[in-house]
Picture (spheres, rainbow, N blue to C red):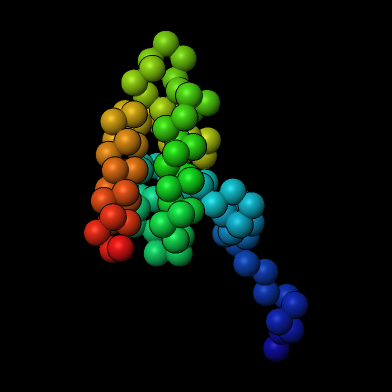
Length: 95
């Protein structure tokens, strides 16, 4: 028999969960991943996408690409803007 204190969750999962709480945008590789997230509300999704669209995430020498911290690679800016537009349309039609 073993005590529950002997059971430890995988480090990767704990670390990922902690990072997700501290920086909710981590773990998204594409803007559509943000839109599909069931936990975030629309305001949080909009903030993440707006941050991703900002010049702070621009790829040097490629102003049409954005690379969000924690994502696997760059994405086209128009993909981020399209996701923001979809959120705006959703908010407009729901009011």
